[in-house]
Amino acid sequence: MKYRKFGNLDWEVSALGFGAMRLPVLNDNQSEINEPEAEKMICEAIDRGVNYIDTAYIYHNGKSEPFLGKILKNGYREKVKLATKLPPWFVKSAGDFNRILEDQLKFLQNETIEFYLLHGLNDVQWPKLKELGVLEWAEKMKKEGRIQHLGFSFHDHLDLFKEIIDEYDKWEFCQIQYNYMDIEFQAGREGLDYAADKGLGVVIMEPLRGGQLVNNLPESITEIWDNAPVQRKTADWALQWIWDHPGVSTILSGMSTMDQVRENLSSAEKAEAGTLSEAELNVVEKVRQEFLKTTPIPCTGCKYCLPCQADVAIPTIFQRYNDGFRYQNMDRVRKFYNSFLKNQQGDRCEECYECEEHCPQEIAIVEWLKKCHETLKSD
Image (cartoon, rainbow, N blue to C red; front, top):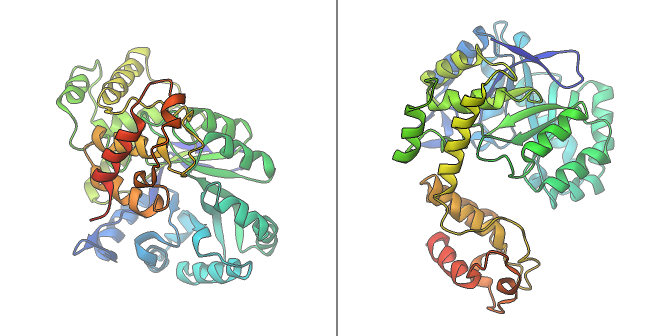
């Protein structure tokens, strides 16, 4: 296992972290973790050098934390640092901070949590948590030793990411989505470098985009990989590309099988920064460009179409719709559309056509919104 600096902390993290969000389950039920198999996987990872395990209050419908608390015994708890997260969606008042943390400490069977994150910050949850005094509360918890290091995970636009970092000078780490397709998505490469330059440990989630970069690949993508000057498995290509970034501290992989654990551990043994050749980087860029060709809506995300007077999330809808086609997984996009865009869906469009007047790509926005909604709406 290779190890890396974790921001400004005097501690080195394993290049591969274990994300306890996609553990093997029984009966296709996320609440029923296949505990014997999951325990074998996690112990194998720790035995081979993984020292960072990430979970959250909501993972596996609340069963991930209690499961980890139960299995990290017999010396395993002392070998790892645990990271878990405060769920803003369940916070209605300041009193919920303590209530949730008490639950988590009980679930994890520990008196302290080494790495504590504010979960999924965006332009709704961040202002709410700030107003309720979450930073002051977290500092108090650190003084009491109930949490050791404070960070946040992020799902919104780059400007907000920078704003959050700049508003509080005691952040120690952050967690962002990043892979070779998401270099300009959410925090992106610019956000990664911004956080690293500020001394934060940078934890990467979704390195394979939930498997989209390795499963059901178009023939044109497979052909590029097959003709690469260096032969690797597609998952290894994606991981090595991220580890090549010096600002990355660790990559979280949500592993569901023992084969995935062993394959990723083997990849982590070769994890180095700044070692991919120009030819190798060019191969990854060719794959990225080939993926981009499968985009049906030529939206660049410039947001000239906003604000929409009906509050339709135009660029987000188009981006997710494109993702569904690109990675041949429209079911995942439907879940997002119907869970997170309930009040901003395409059927709210009033057909004023103001958005089309401002679109530099001359997209038929109104018609595309109708098509997106018809494809993505709940039955």
